[in-house]
Length: 245
Ligand SMILES: O=c1ccn([C@@H]2O[C@H](COP(=O)(O)O)[C@@H](O)[C@H]2O)c(=O)[nH]1
Image 1 (cartoon, protein in one colour):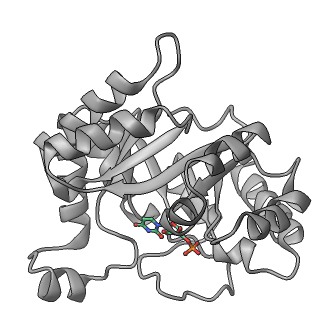
Image 2 (cartoon, helix red, strand yellow):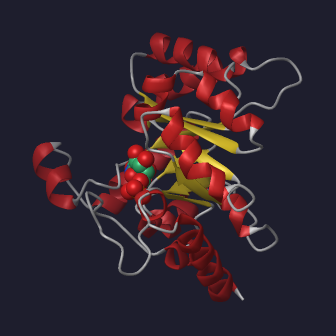
């Protein structure tokens, strides 16, 4: 994707990991006019239901509905048919579900998208950014280097006809080399300097992520858990813009 000409704010997604609409309002009200893209994950979607997507769209925000569908192909297809009707701009599946599941998900998404409406971007989650080498090798019993497995999953995702992947920014250069520059990379595991790493393993700063070629970065707690979310947001934007100039 062409990064140089776009407003970087369009490519910074704030993860709204809350369980009530009140918490969401408290978080986004001061950020209105600053943020453009938000992510609704399982915690919020399960608590508030599909109405949360239209609420956020009415606020003029783009919405990544991060439900990470992972099931047999027929069920994934049906899930995507239903999700298509909610009005999100981006949805996702787990690449570990395999090529047939991802292709079925894409078919369902196309079937559910209203005539004339834009189909949401469909993204495959490769290896969760909280997963490190030891966990992948020993608990998940997947041998090899994380980067190689991520690129393998990215190529499966491309083969299934999806638009891109979720991965760590650290893997973006290898993904772009293998799948091409137009293949979208959405990267969580973002930690501004000094921020608590928490449960994330494969992390970079926002500036590093864009330097490595990420198309979208996802930032949650570093902003939503800050005392001054607007200040943190603006300092991240300034650092990224300075780095890109
Ligand atoms: O591999 C993945 C896939 C999804 N996520 C999601 O991104 C945010 C990250 O939040 P932080 O607070 O910035 O760590 C969160 O909603 C995850 O569900 C991910 O981290 N890694």
